[in-house]
Image 1 (cartoon, helix red, strand yellow):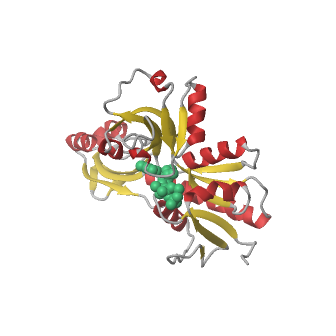
Image 2 (cartoon, helix red, strand yellow):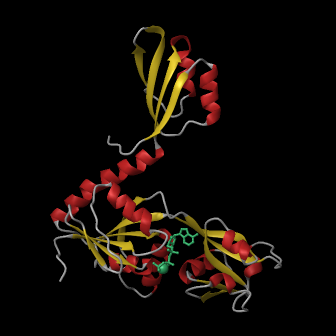
Image 3 (cartoon, rainbow, N blue to C red):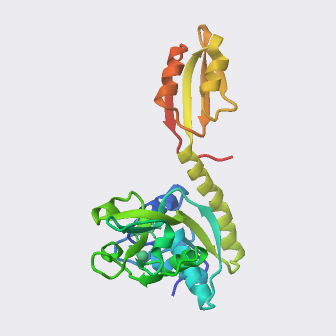
Length: 299
Ligand code: ATP
Ligand code: MG
């Protein structure tokens, strides 16, 4: 029997979301020992258990309250929600954070040789997909009378196999489409990984733990987007130098020992510094320009 006082988090066992989700959990201070082939992993320093499952199962586990939280792609989550709503099953959850990985789009693609004259071209066609509910919603919203053909895998070969006229599948670079002689025509859904919580209330202890972890998630996300920039700048050009530094409202300006004409500037920037900007800074007489990653941030 599992210990119901421990926070249960569902994570994809093996696939595109696994590594980033587990890295995020580790980055917020949760120590984990994940052994191959096991469904459950216990944290050694927090009352947290990970459930390692197929991503298809994660939305349902959260919606049924079997786990407390889950990491899942919005595409999978939205599809499951529509599916459950259509049969009046529980489909509630809370989105805690939209994350910075798992980015992709659900797109309709057609064979290269097919003529295309806007979405109305799809009228009367068969479109193979793993996401029939999202696709049918799109057809409905756009007044298209087409048929979604459900395939759980190898969607991209459906047109060649004569199973469908077009496909609706996840795309990130487009390389798979190209390799299969398909071209992307309509983006129907844009997705990222999200962290969700079950809708049913949790014990005070579990909720308090989540509330303590979320600012850490924010800190990790913010740190990844931020850079620590240091440089030496001539005092005479201080204002010009500041105006070149991106997202730097309040730089720290420090004197340099034994040098009255130069100051050191330290700044946390929400953007990186491009080579072009570094070159401009250098031409203003700046030196020792350093751009460093930040590991963690808090308030
Ligand atoms: P599982 O065995 O867990 O069911 P899967 O094959 O369904 O795995 P993956 O291919 O690992 O799933 O993709 C998981 C999620 O990663 C997708 O649902 C989507 O949210 C995201 N993703 C990001 N980029 C892509 C991409 N190029 N193709 C497919 N999914 C992507
Ligand atoms: Mg899956």
